[in-house]
Length: 164
Image (tube, rainbow, N blue to C red; front, side, top):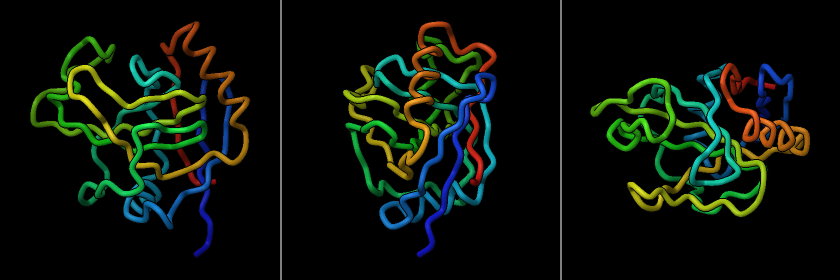
């Protein structure tokens, strides 16, 4: 199997890191993400999971991937895939600038940039994510950008994923 890589960028800040896809551990998820690239969307900083940035997308897989290579404790550099029904994110408390209504599905592609993350949501409980990639280059610079995003805000910033 040939290693495949993606670049993950905070576009406005001009910060990019490179991640290796974990095709041996999450083959269905990696195939779905790879096929859909490039992807870009408004970036959000996690409220509950701690050291996480993410973007939300309409579903892009032919069918939702199974829960392969799951975690509830992502480590620095993990790229995670989540799929949510609209009712799970359908509250303004999450800070989204649009309503995510019942019956809709939303895909969340996330980057974890520091330790001590716990995927526990007060509304729905444990939220296991699929670890589909691991940052292999540029994590320190990305973490600096993520901390800046946390302190100064995410408005106007995009999170982009593309083939490297």
